[in-house]
Length: 233
Image 1 (tube, helix red, strand yellow):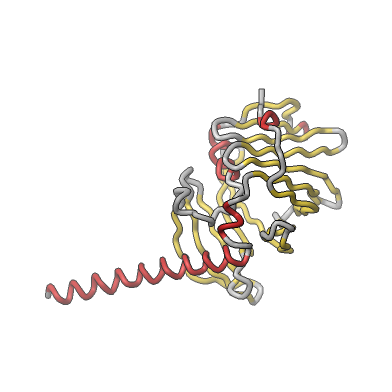
Image 2 (tube, rainbow, N blue to C red):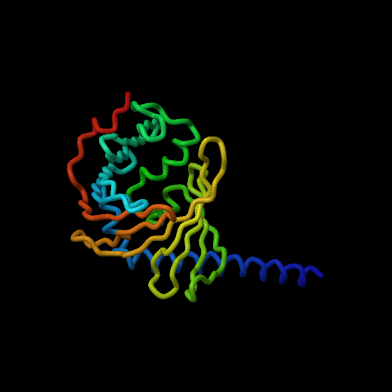
């Protein structure tokens, strides 16, 4: 009986080991495809310029980030300035179109959801050292394509499910649950048009979020960023 139980235990252990190895293999291939961990580890600041396309309207935006220190997004629509700032301890936002005419503090729940964005290096680069945990969810199919599904839970408690294309090794889709005005909502974004920058790392230049598309026009790696832009009020 003991031998039988031991065999069962070893069998179950082997299953979990294979799943873990499979997930790490998928991640390893992905990191190689986007430029490699060594290059991504050297990314300390970033500036992204592009536009948000929604209902035929194009809204220019600029995003500036300093690794684990601050993130700021600026946009303007019909004279209305839209600002979003995140730091490790506080966050602020301004959007006259949604009733926030001036830069105001965001809630703790909003800050918690945005803290992971401070990691401008890819979330899967050294994910264990960053305190994140992954779980293999098997495979899925969509539009005739096959994807590996991996759920990541970050040290901040945020969960996202990533769909890795089995052919390209790139992330095709991300699913998550976000809180908006006290309600939980499912969020989905598709990452499209991957391009390699002059720095040698690969980014998706289009993010399809259903009702709107974020289109990247230019990416600058390791620009000099004035830390005061992350000051709120």
